Each structure stands twice: as structure tokens, then as C-alpha cells.
Length: 172
Image 1: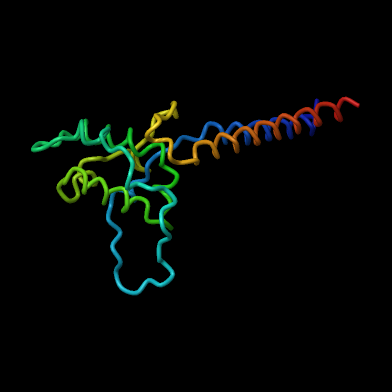
Image 2: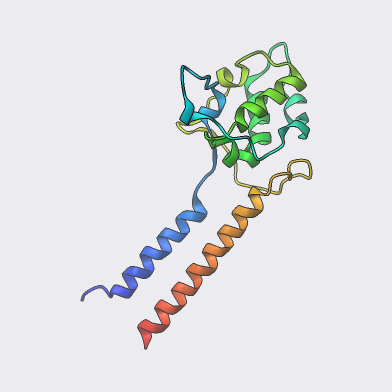
């Protein structure tokens, strides 16, 4: 009673493609820390952020994270709520999105230096983003969510076709 090669291939493909959909998102811990330049770093120059953080609505954070105490649960929750839709861009260490976002946030609210990096501790990868929900109109400036949805749809369609052909040609 040997295993059918087609069955094994189908199971492997199913596991691979379901892994794409089940991947969790997070805000990297590196985003919260200032990565100042330490000496010459010609190959480490960062590209400009593709998002425009200057005109984004920061009231999600500024309405909840207030001094003089700056409660960590409220501040970190608000930061996560604001930043998670942009996690892919913020985690990309080749651009300056994280420093740009924190610069504009500081202009809007004048938070103490290092407030979020010292208070907001997530898991080993950083702050965990909740499951993606509908974005508000203010935060829909980024097309990355639509790009990810299109990519997921494409992967789903391709895996469906591959499964169909594997089943059809194995049965013939």
C-alpha cells in the first residue's frame, strides 16, 4: 500500500499555499529603535518612503496616548492600530518610513524621545498586528493592502488551477 505521488504533491502544494494565507503580520522591533548611522555606510543609504506620512491622521495615537504618564497599554495599542496597515513598509529597513512616521508623529504630539521604543514591547519579532480588518478612509493612502489582496487572489487562483489539473490528469 504505497502513497500515490500525485496525492503527496497535492498535499505539499496545499500546505505551501495555505501557508501564504496564514502568515501573520507584525511591526518589527527594529522599527521602534533609532538606527543612527555609525560611520561610513554608503551601501546602507535608505530610499524615500513610498507613503506620505506628512498628511496622515495621527489622532488614533494622539487621542489615546497623553502625558504626563503616557500609559503603555494605551500608547502601544494606539501605535499598533495606526501602524499595522503599513507594517510592510515600516518593516522594510531599506527605506526611511519608520523614521519619517515617528518624525511626523513627534511634530504632531511632542512625545518624549524613545517613548514608544521603551514602552512598546511585543513578541520576539516586535509588535503583533491583529488580523487585517477594513481600513478607515484616512488610512487608505497606501495601495499595499490592495496589492496584497491581489497577490493572495492570484495565488489562490493559481493553486486552484494546479489542483484541478493534478486531479484531472491523475484520474485520466
